[in-house]
Length: 110
View 1 (cartoon, rainbow, N blue to C red):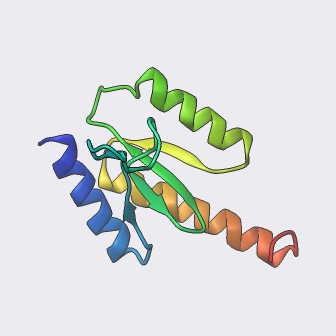
View 2: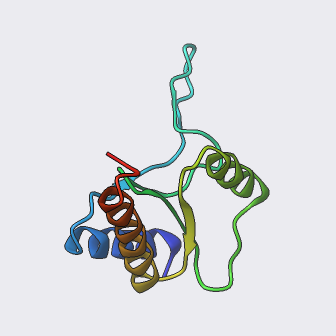
């Protein structure tokens, strides 16, 4: 299985679990105007309201640029997780949702 296949399976599982899972990535068009989207190191999946998920095949590690992006996001209070399976991704997203629901119940978050 490729990382792309794993990412597709993870997104499908997240959607089935009730999350809005957006595929992200860096796009660079080679033209005189040079349109770009995303940032180098940006995680593979964005869950609006919850955080970002970096997909890696079992045993693989994020690159230096990815780790730098993750750290920058965490310093700003943005959740980032690295996962190796659909189960791990859904468990992570459900934990995030539970944390946010708890914060709302306590009046710490709108």
